Length: 592
Image (cartoon, rainbow, N blue to C red; front, side, top):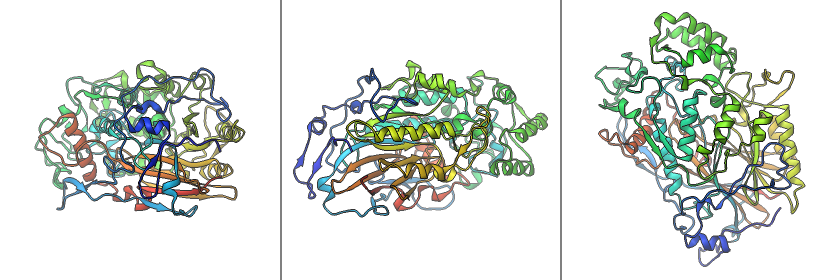
């Protein structure tokens, strides 16, 4: 392995710390959080051997807050977690007990004295499943809420305000919680948008890199979605309708919908950030094959279905779950048969779906560069090759590999095509041959190993095989440099050890930021200098206060409501936070 760049080496008792130059600068507040200068290597760039010529310089970012005494807890779930404050029905949130750090030795024993020996390799933040939602989009299927909680959530009109508060939390972090090392970057692991909509993509890029966002489509003067429909199926915060959610204790909040479509201002991340694509970014509804002109016309048109016979809805969702309608034929037939029941809405061309090329091109737009890198991992080479996977440097010692796990053939589960699988293997082999020794590797994708079972043909690559999670686990396990596979999709915290005949690695799956408990994760990699590596995972919430004020409809107040409403959402799954060993952890494995 390459020479390790120490950030700080402390004695086991926390006494005098031995600092190298970077740590010394961080301790005096002289290092900016853009210290983790990032650059994308692109598909086939031979990133395992050398950086490409013309390494991009990231523009100066905000000054880092003063380095904390490490480890620290402020701003993380190691200090406190939003929790209900008693009662039944609709429950208010407040400060709850912390989630302690759990040491997991499934793959290697944790050896005593490692705290005093360890040096930092890299530290980054994972965002996943932000699901920035255009809640008025005609293709949304809110009428299926009885079949799936993901069809409509009472809080989702506040997704932009909630995501901005998450950005604010990251900007306030004092480096990495376990080591105090500078944070190198933020990575997303897909479902950045909800319905493959150009408007949502614009909102996501402005949330991440900074800008003003008006989370509204259609009529610029008013909200036209299901929460003003008069249908008792949905929470109507602004009026006295005794809807299904108010019967459960949901409040009446005068002015809520006007506030929900009001302009939001994002400061943008103070760190370089990288993007990974998910099924909701690539497929209409997150599950139907793209490029059907009917869905484009419907998405931008002036009609929206807001209610549906429950029996028909159950049949539609059963077909989706079983993967029986990957092209959306059944969904199209249903919409065509329900024209008389549709409501009129204001047409809007910004609701059109975006193509994979448009997704990459939007990331490459200098207007969204923020602290960089331009493209946020994607390069002109991705455009030329029509790919959405790449490799990049998280740090000098750690290579990141971002995959595209969505199957263009349709369905919400994923897989990799043969061309991408072979590219991944070439990247891993090239890294093994890297001058100076191999880097450690972190693989990033949207889907988890257990949700990569969709081997449906990709219509854009006829005859190319698709490859599932078990095959990818086997491939990664052949390379001792692979430390972790980091992903999302399941909306649940889960950490899984993988042991193969050739090596072992951790799979780290993180909960979403649309469903409670609305989390992101800081991941730190350290060398313990005893033959083991530790991966620290620390969960963070948004910067919004745990306690809400129903009279506060400011941007911060809405972000707080976003969390509380998500906790109370009917059908919300209480187990998404995972067990203690899936949350704040130290994951130990043998060094290859």
